[in-house]
Length: 320
Length: 287
Image (cartoon, rainbow over all chains, first blue to last red; front, top):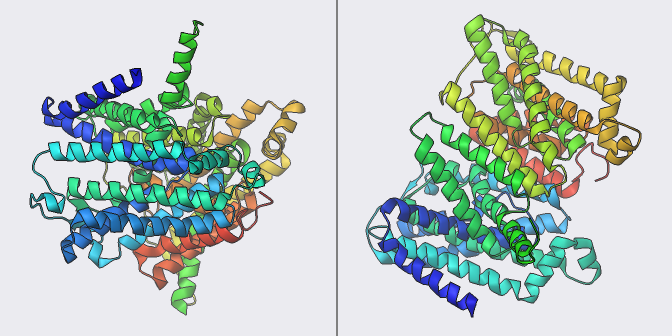
């Protein structure tokens, strides 16, 4: 009952919020939802299956470029194009996963495989003329909802929120499914789960494809929120880091982790930008880096698991 | 044909300094099992120090490696003592995050101090060349190759012959075993991280005579170092050395066979092949 009550209140606040806050805060909230969505997608592979990927920017870029190119050159609505992008991203992830998982790559080796695959995609994308190369790809603004283009921020707010709710629902269902149980088993002890008859290859592939497809949907959102794509910004290592950093800070393998992580990092980022952006170029990022280091040193298990731990101790009446 | 031989020669010459850079990474990984995501950014600080010494005091980059090596040694030792030592037992992802934080701080402090414009150390001999048959040799690249090779050899002798070097190797082979026989493991860690950083700092200085750089240069070299170390074998000294030369050559050949902006793709394809068929690396032992 309490949960339903809290859920309803939070839901109503979220629905009313964009009409009350300034456009700066609308932007901030959109970014929070959007990165929480990407984090949730990454979380399926990284948090639940325990396979860290440092190459999710590749799937993101496939989603962004597929829907943009289909819309610009073939007049296909991004609402359809984004699903084409999701399928292509899933296919790429199956390719990478096939290579990596078949040969038993784990830990750092898998991380570096995903990084290398994304870097290859970036270098190729820079040399494909239809994607705009170094100049980048511009999308004309025609405020037409069918073209995923809207006036003002409020429609984007609700789309981003909808994406996040959708991905969180997927993860919620995953947690309660057999697949989710298998994934956690693989994360905790891959050899043991294999010995017990879990088809680890198959389930890791499923997690990877699901994660990649969702990430590609986020790419489409980005394309029509920014109206400009360039491989060195959407497809570089920093962007893969942006995607993975939030669920890790918030708490991997939990539904609320990516959301809390996204909120926290966005507030930290906004704080350092607001107070230090005017000073010297770079200072705001230095502050952000320092804050990140502090978070890692003091909350090494992630924000959400630490909060839960503290809360339970408090409930038991022990001093923390 | 001359074109390809020329490309191999150029690649080999750059590869020497790649080797030195990768030796630093493999030393840090071998001893602490931590991947230094700030590797390239430590290198950029070495580059800027050399630049600053050259511009203000006219110190030649081949001399200033003594200063840059020492300063970046202290930087690495401080990062280890202050930060990395606290999370040695934390999960991989937290170690990666910490080092990414360090990388952000290093890159952007360089941006604050030196600005975003590319810098170049314009020595009097920057454009000197000599010919050997039909092949051109670039004097700064030859000098860099020689110094990098000498430093790598020095590191090898240090690790093999001195007590400190033996302690580092012991900690890398078997941390618990080294602890049991009374090795001061935290001191070894600080030393190893410092030396690893000094390698990449010196490598940075050595590249300044022929490579323009900016604060964002670091990321490319971080990734290149990863590639080399995986190709050669993580934690393997010889592997990093051979891997560095190999990556230098493959980039240089890639620039000739494909277009220059695609040169790294050869390295990445090499990396993926290695990951698939010999994940322990060319010269690595068992995983």
